[in-house]
Length: 416
Image (tube, rainbow, N blue to C red):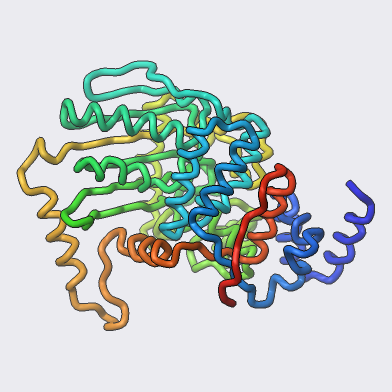
């Protein structure tokens, strides 16, 4: 490492508060620190993280172009690059930015580090009329997800209900993306995934389960889909990382610090790596989040025969851990036409009834599951772009330089 860079780091660290030093070191290990120190025209000194940041708009077609160019630069086949770009674009459009373009650096590191096999193709190991056991072969998340959902949809159309479970998988993005594929065919889509161990079970000190997302997408008339997409932890490590980067506090009851006490300091949460189940502590019914996570773990690693969460490697924001994660995922598809007629009408009626309930605050109307993402996607599609901070743009530009591709094109947006 160049001596001048070490001197710059030392000078900047000397002027930072202790919690900022911990964050700087974490960012540096994750590949962010050097960008903040040396990015020249693209960024400001790290001390300026504490001031309000300008945002920059990146057009949707430019996001897609950049993702595909980056993936092709690390030898991802065209078809797989397009599929992965679709998955990441969905995340950005629905407001889950840390599963979208901002996850691209980690995805690229995993590919270059052979934690992901970008040219691999999943295969069926065992199947019956309504079930399939799949080997994801460590392929990209979009590759495995598309394969499994295609198999599940075909089986559900034929026999009414299908369940497909895959081992040797990678991060598959926003869970509801896969359920939406079923909903477009008039089917119900349910998805589960286990993840790195980040959750502390009730009364425990050690991590034993992941954030283990659950998603349910039910088709309704006139695009009135019900979209349930939740983690079984109160927050995720990506959100904690974002809070730390932006100098924001966590909500109460989301994480434990190194002393095993609830903390609102994201730096302490990153240091301990301990997230609480959905619900918070035991007094707030955290056993329910714990039980949901356990259910997902059994549906995934139990059926797939892959690693349990407590055998997985730790959460790795740097993408530098040795070997693939060996996540497991389950995809269930149900044909509502095999049951009482009028399913989509009843779903639409439910959604509309929930929305017309009298709100406690007239300025905060009651929402149906999925309304927040639906509103976000309509806004972003109408605008045609997604806002990113200067620090985020900086990181992406450094990747473009490293991979020798055309830099990300953006325009000034507004100050937050």
